[in-house]
Length: 408
Image 1 (cartoon, rainbow, N blue to C red):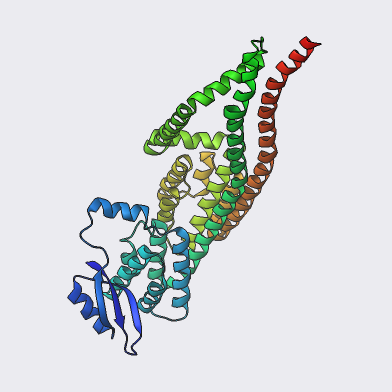
Image 2: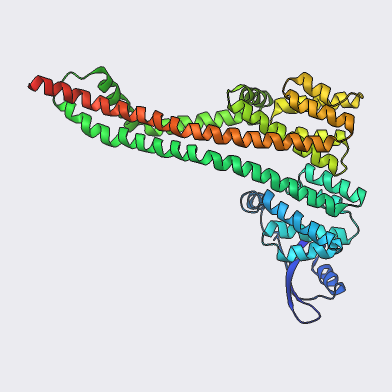
């Protein structure tokens, strides 16, 4: 089927705009008339003149749906369904007010498929770029239990919580990154513009220079002449590093394992992964998703291959009838607090409650550790930049002092 964009009039003569999914223009007109909507103009949304490559580039580069937009849609759909509005009219309302072109087209296709008798789960499963497996499985569980509105509300809460956590982490890292960027530019400007002008005076005097000044001059000349080579080497290094840590399984495993062992940073990464594991697993279980299915989803959510392997092994042990806390303890990647809380949850039947408590505690700890780390990084970076500037100043002043002593 194709997606058509239409301009039409309703029974009261009000102008309507939207999208409709149909095999052809005639079928689209017929569908609109059945809904008491009278089309004025219908155009195919995606022209066939575009090549497959250009279409793919357009979707990948320009048409994107962010996680926050999906969360807003989920919250609004949950509110409409909780108010007693049927699913198809709710999707129609959200489609008409949606401003993102790709999400609007997607909602049009989902609405048409639901209107034809498909379930919401089957409809959204055709758009994995927008609705990940976590979303799909929760909606499936909600439809199976007849509590789709509650599941969507829970899903919206989860998405907003994760976005808030990541936003706080990113905002805490902005300050040291900006400081490093500005400091690097200032030092590069000093070394390539100011230092050559001053040191040229010493070279014209043919004076024997101190070793520290000679080193400064050599570094300055190298940066001034080969700055482009440094940029190329840095770009090649980051490209090779990215390829090794993303494109190859062994490289990614080595990188993730190294991350967990880095002092301070490793603890923060581990706490974020554990918090995400607990929060996601609790949300899935609360929505009625089976434990083994939830474990398979959570493995890909933690964003760490090493921790993901431990979760996969725990899932295998679950299939053999073992508990969850034991395999997680054996992995050595989950602290005793986490495994003991999970064990209590298994024994008391309140697994979701315990997982949410652990997630909240580790999210708070991770944010606190990041705030403390960034508060220390600022002064350390100032001291580091000060040492470099001090090296430049001493290297320039030392020959001047020696010339003054010769004059006396």
